[in-house]
Length: 597
Image (cartoon, rainbow, N blue to C red; front, side, top):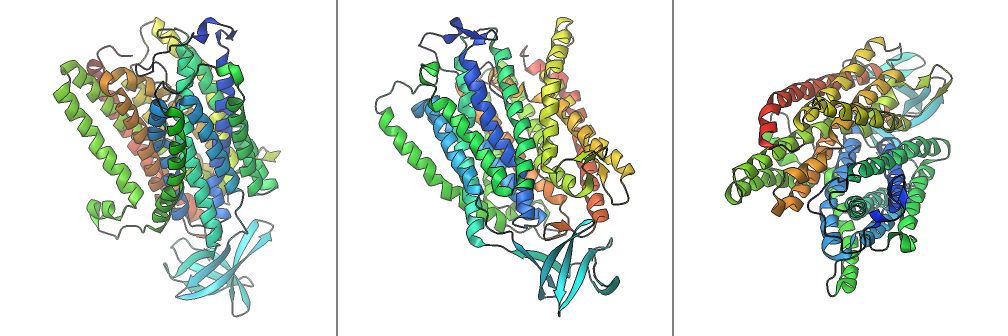
C-alpha cells in the first residue's frame, strides 16, 4: 500500500504552542496520537474498502472490458496520489492542516455515497461480423454461462485457444467466429456512468486535502529531535493497515451478500467516522494543525473550498478522456504510443520528465558538489520507486481480476472468500511482519549490518518480482478448471508485503533528508508525483493482461490463465533485473548520500 507517513522532515513548521509531547501520553506517546491514529484508520477503512471493489464493480456491474476498467482504475489511483501536492500546499499556506483534513473527509465521504447509486446492472450484447445480438446470463452448476440470442435460438458462447469463438447449441458447435469477429459490449446508462465518475472525482479531490495533512499533524506532536518520532509514525502506519485489513474483508462481503451499494456505503460510513473524530475533537487537538497566522485566512478558506469543488468537473472530463482513448496502432513506435496517450497520461509523464532533470540542473547551478550528489541519489531512487509501485499496485487491478477468474478461493473446502477480499492478505501480512522487520533492522543496526537505503530499495524490487514468479510457479498445479489455489496468491502477497516494508517506511523520510533545504517541498511534490505516475503506469501494465470477456465473464479460462502468467513472468523478470542493477549502483549511491541513513 502506498501510504507512507512523513517521518523526520526539516520542512515542518515551527511549533509556537506548548508542545503536547510533554503532557499526558498514550503508550509513551502524545495522547493526541490516539485520535489521529483512529482518524487515519477510519479514512483508510473507507479508501481501501472502496478500492477493493472498484475494478470488480467496473467489470461486473458496468461490464466494461478489461482495458477500460484497468485503465480507469489506474487513472483514478494516479489522481489520488497527485492531488496531495496541491492539498498539502494549500493547507500549509492558507487552510491549516486540521481544516484541510475535515474538508477532505467530507468530500471523500460524499464521493463514496455517490458510488452507491449505480443503477441497474448493464445488459451485455455482442457484435458478430457487424451484426448486434443480445446476450443473456444464466446460472449453471459451474457458475454462470453467457448465451447469444440468435434468431430465437439460445447459443452458448465459448472462447477457443486460437482466439476464435464458438457458439454452441444442444451440445453442438453451430458456428465458429474468426478471431476479431466477435466483439462484446454492454448497454449501460450514461447517467449512472456519469454519477460513478463524479463520485471518483470527488474522492480524488478530497484525498488531496486529507492524505498529506493528517501525517503532518502527527509530525506536529513531536518537538524537533524527539526520539519518539519514528516509533510514533510506525504506530500511525499500523492504523493505516488495520483500517485496510478490516475494510477489505467487510466491504466486499457486503457487496457480495447485499449489493454493491452496501459495500460502498460501508466505506462512506467509515469516512464519516474519520471526519467526526476531527470535527468533534474539541480541546483534544487544540493548537495542532491550526491555520497560519496570516490576515484574511478565514475569508480565503471559502474560496479554496469553492475552487476545490470546481475541480470535480475537471477531473470528470479527464476520466471521460481517459475512457475514450484508443490503443496505439501496431507498429507506431514509442512516439506513436506517446501521442496516443490520453490527456492525463501526457500531463503526468510530461511533468515528471521535466521535473527530474530540471531539479538536477537547478541543483548543479545553485548547490555545491555535496548537495548535487545527494539530489542525484534522491532522483535515482525516485525513478526506481516508480518501477516498484507500478508492479506492486497490480493488486487492485490485474491481480484482483486473476483472483476472480483463475483462482480457487476455497480454504480446504471449508469456506471461500471473494476476489475483493484477497486484498486483505497484504494488510494482514503488513501487520504481522512490521514488528518483526523493525526488530530485524534494529538488530542489524546494532551490529553495523543494516542495509543502506539503496540496498533496501533493490531488495524490494527483487522481492516484488519473486512474488510474481512464485504465483507463476504455483500455476503448474492449476486444476482442470484452470484455477490456481488461493494459497499461491497468498504467498505472492506475503512476499510483496515483505518488499513493501523494505521501501515504504523509509521513502518520504529519505527524500526530506537528501533534499536541499530550499526546495524540500518541491522534492516532496516530485515524490508524490512519482507515485502518481506509477499508479497510472500500473493501469497500463494491467491492460496488457486484458482478456476477452462477455458480460464480465472470460470466454476461455485457459487463455485467461496463460495471458496473466505471461504478463506476470515478464514483469517479474524486469523487476528482478532492475533490482540487481540497483544493488550494483548501491555503492556509488551510498557515497553520494554522504552518511544519510
